[in-house]
Amino acid sequence: MKKLKGLLALILCAAVCIPLCGCDTIDRIFGNDRYGDGYYDDNYYNDPYADNQYYNNVPQLVSHYIDVGQGDCEFIEFPDGQSMLIDAGPAESGKDVVNYIKNLGYNKIDYVVATHPHTDHIGGMKQVINSFTIGKIFMPKASSTTSTYKNLLEAIDKKGKKVTTTKAGTSIFRGNDSSLSVKVLAPVGNNYEELNDYSIVLKITYGKVRLLYMGDAEQISENDILKKNYDVSADVIKVGHHGSSTSSGQSFVNKVRPQFAIMSLGAGNDYHHPHNQVVNRWIKAGAEIIRTDECGDIVLTTDGDEFSIDTEKGG
Ligand SMILES: [Zn+2]
Image (cartoon, rainbow, N blue to C red):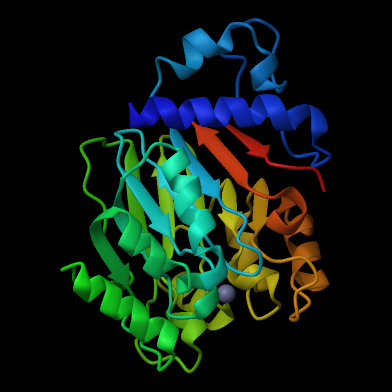
């Protein structure tokens, strides 16, 4: 039931948003002409055969990149009905994040990942913890002296939950689908100067489709990931640190080579994110940029073979 609700919300959003949207990355589907009906690389939602044959029969993974202004928040609906939240934006977006996930039909979040203890990632998390049944909570081995961080730990404790400390090479997902994997690629080290480099970096693979989530990992962490020889190639990356030049080093970008680089940030932010050289680096590597400050919420849907991306509004 919760899955159905999620899909209904998605279809409704697409129906409303596509005609209005100026973000040129939406309304395409990447892969083969599944039904042989000539809708190859065309708007999935215009395909009269798609609704019945595609959505209803094939388990979907849906990755929501929720617009939280200057911050990060991703919610993933797994094909088996489980769900994962990666960060929850700043405190002021906590309510919106809760409503977004509830509107998809979820009362439980199986996996909560706080990539690192900065307020633009964990600020909204206390409200999430208080609003849902929570499965497991993952954080890196890094702490902060901020009240936001302390309040979050208190909320977790009050809920009777424990934090599982996570680092590269560990597993955080349990499922029976061999075509689905969630790998932790970072933090590799345990002695970084910058809190950002402790960010939990995740690679989700569903069938042929590979999605990378960087948190705020900077180039030092990227280089550690590369030294480990982890496979970072991906179709879609949630770019590290809101498109800052501290992240997305050339050697890392060369290895990822995504079709899409998603940047989560607020319009007119104080940090001037995204930095031009980073935007150009991803474009040069063959990626199209999609930004939450221009496109609002971004929703990727995949059956493990093809994927489509829808955005809330035009840029
Ligand atoms: Zn951040």
